[in-house]
Figure 1 (tube, rainbow, N blue to C red):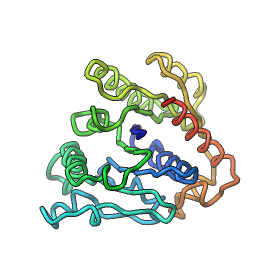
Figure 2: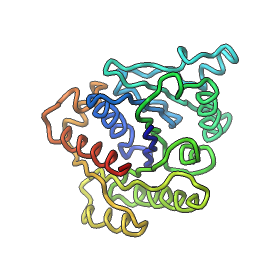
Figure 3: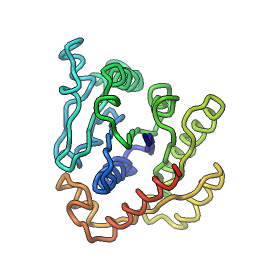
Figure 4: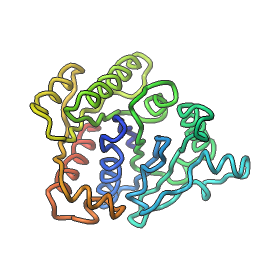
Length: 249
């Protein structure tokens, strides 16, 4: 089983990239499970065409009666989708919520029941505290991919994520799989991304240009390859999926 986590600053496009990778790998005949680990709980909306109930909300509602059928949805394209969710606004810790949600999925035997070939954790990377680092830990993701642009705060968050992966190296946790550059038109953007990759002894596994098709597909709650399969962005996202798979060989 290929297990990976895609991290990035909020708003950097990690969910769009995660969903398009999931859709692309599914088209190639792989069974993919995508688990949203962001309190906004919108990671899988492009795949499902809507927001789905979260593990934490369902746990609050059903308690010990919660089943996998309640928490797991299959998208029209065949991606197995889960949203961890977050606490009630103003109450509780979002990081702790991710821990509880992932532990619940494991306890319910989600991985054994659905037997995915690929598991993708889509994780908010503005902070890398205990809960948000959960997908990096042993038994979850084997590799971490970081989405960044050349913007200052995006690079800052990306560096923190890479540093967290490095700090966990001796514990047998996930390793750094590479950088995904989501271009925002910043001056010397490619050079800045390469410098970040070099700093952490990794590489840029794929790039994505800004495009109208990405925005339009998001508005339609579809993946780019579903809405505009022949556009440049769809081809770039397919190459990013290639880069992800190549890193596991």
